[in-house]
Length: 335
Ligand code: KG4
Ligand code: ZN
Image (cartoon, rainbow, N blue to C red):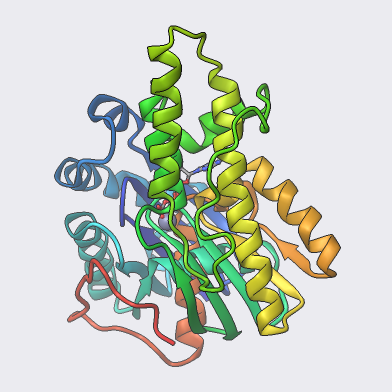
């Protein structure tokens, strides 16, 4: 079955064609980097307007590069839950139009479930049950994946998402957008033990996260050095900050895996592209005798291929939407 996936929940306009929920025939992602740089972050109304300008071209590009036409599309999957409301509406309106005009089923997908399926697309062999850490600009979530499309929420962030902390620290340090990849690169030249920043909630038994205090502590350390007229070792700050985030993410996820008695961990979402996070997870997983999985780099950040894959899985469970499908900015992931 050929599924057209559409993703517009934040600042990437994306369309993809995926066959049978597992073979990616094309994946087109138009990022709004110029707008991010101009406004210092995502401005929801401006992002939504950009989606309306791009969505038609992006869908056409996805079809063309897979050498397919709309006549070949057998279902449309679209992100309908969790995201910026105006942005979600653009994708859902496009998906409904195609579903109505082509008489093909429509499936509304939860964005986080899309991220989970980005890893399943990359590694169909991930065993069930497993523990999944979804870590991105908007979310930091620990889930117990019982079986396909059945989840138990274990923990989430109490304030900033991990990717948001990367982006805010990068912005504060005057680095480019998005901050995660820039800090990842810069940290490679720095000393990760130069500063010992707090590891929030690392010892707490609760599987939740908090990154706002860490962010403040990095900003204060930076300001203190400026006040003392000292040189600013940006690479050391980046490496030390990144290490604090990585240690917390790894420790809490591995503890959750142990508590749940699973021997597989899936890490997904934009921050799962982080090179130090991958390295630290691999080391911890080896020590604990657990297998750890990451999505292919092209599937870590927001993309429509993961939405098509999740939509296919929902369709296989008989769950389809209809033209009454609405968008929900904040929605729990169905358990
Ligand atoms: O999954 P995503 O595209 O969007 C959301 O669903 O939020 O994730 C974007 C986030 C941004 O915060 C970005 O800075 C972060 O992922 N990110 C990274 C890296 N690549 C992207 N964070 C750390 N290291 C990276 N290499
Ligand atoms: Zn995302």
